[in-house]
Length: 256
Image 1: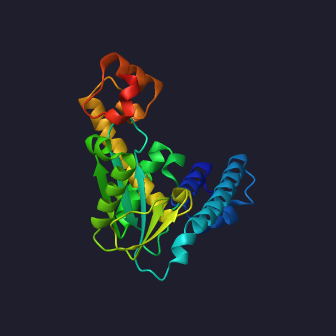
Image 2: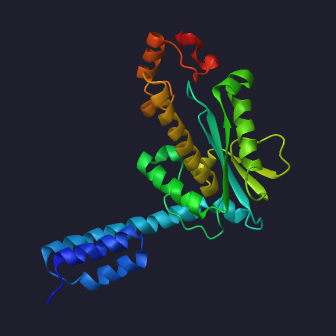
């Protein structure tokens, strides 16, 4: 008895969800000659998925170019931050050391990913990382020393809180003062280095979760949606109800 179309569909779903190129190739070979319309569509879908996966593998190979360049270093740490631009809340930095054999797909600049994909990748990165850590600077510290200095402090904390000491730091554009580790600042590093991109993802998820909690504590500003950034609705709320305790006064002087 021929395998049903629904059973074949489940086979494709299994191979696709596992990002299994070999499984997709076997699927295509096995069902390529099946003349049923439904199976033909599934084979075309498998061919499309395979092509996309191969392209993603190539993109990820390119994303590890800096990691290959410094492969003589045992622990390569990517560092990035999230939250330099918002009107409220902290700046959050993350440091991530990925394993040398890291095979996570779809790591990218966090701004290029959907919230759902960031959440999924954040879990995977934390599970597989050799080590990761966060650094935080709140709105008060940002107002005291300015956002750049607060960001650098948060980055330094993240590096110092790792379970292992990195041999080299790949930083998104900046050089962190007060650290006795070799540093490589990379312009737009979150789009060029998998380690930096991984840091950007977990930092983004960490900060987003914090701001979602703040939405319950300080309702009316839309923190759940805008995460503290200066959306039109957020600015209108500031003008209407004033500043919350977590607003950055140095960022909001023009609105009150």
